[in-house]
Image 1: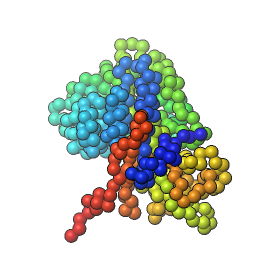
Image 2: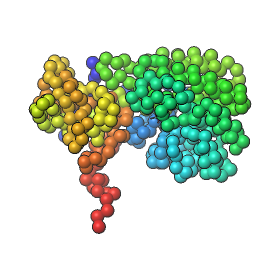
Image 3: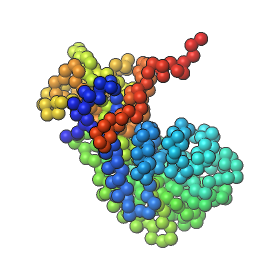
Image 4: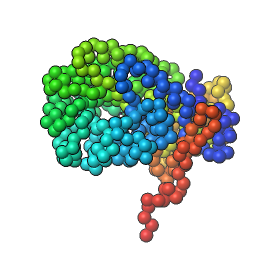
Length: 413
Ligand SMILES: *Cc1c(COP(=O)(O)O)cnc(C)c1O
């Protein structure tokens, strides 16, 4: 059974200060999970997780992870600026973007971030911006173009994905970068997101380790790290299991020992987003209406603007009715938000306990790619983000938007 981050009594108490909908994160859950990840990879010298900022771009969350040794992975200018504001700079930042504007590379260079180039044409593009001052280390993103995806829902298959370079382009990119004075390299690939089971990282590691080794033999390039990127999944369905990070790490270690028996011993990096935060955030919302037409609808005060995944990919998010955890799930509902879009449904044909107006729902696994995908369609305002501290207290870590925020960018002549 999935356990919500807060119970009914806590939710009622929090609502007095912060009305629903809001996102709430579990500090202890986040920390324990990050510590476990580092423990699992303790065999690897210099292992580092660079949290994918886009998953949950919140300074408090980022600082918690940073205090446990994590760096960040950014994909845009404002994410770089956010890291800088959090005091996270230099090699603590991986900058992994695509179709990157020149000013973003310039900014990343200025912060001393480690840049992952998405394409061979970006070698010259970056060199022009660096103007003779290329960084010592550059990372390259590989797309092996082969069917690999275990979960195709989010990124499609590598052949269809817009990311990364071909195998031949990697060799060309390394040679060119060597001529430009780059000393060491990173190799990166992200071939599928939200992979359950324990096989994705080891399989990807096998490909990247042998590719790094080949590139080393071809060009003499020294690989400082291999970056396994994101992609470890989380159990959105109550019947799914959380991947076993120790089993995953052991699988990666086997591949590592097979590939690197000689002088080159790259360290490992990851850029997990979903795995770091997903299970440790709930969207809390209140039932405000019922409607019976051809189906039974329960209307809530959150909408897809607070959590887009169900609307965007039909993603399943488990729902707990707070205070009715042990009641039988003998009523069928579509749980819907108020957007003028018929995909604004958190759940379709979901069996739940009988709902009443005022019931508070916890929508699970909203900690990553949840709040961050929010938008203002229909004039909806982004909700607050709260942190359930280890001592049980609740801290506001982002206030809810107000109409003034919504109007701030408008021009009223
Ligand atoms: C989105 C993203 C991640 C994180 O992906 P998850 O599926 O959340 O682990 C990591 N690296 C890059 C480059 C990304 O775009």
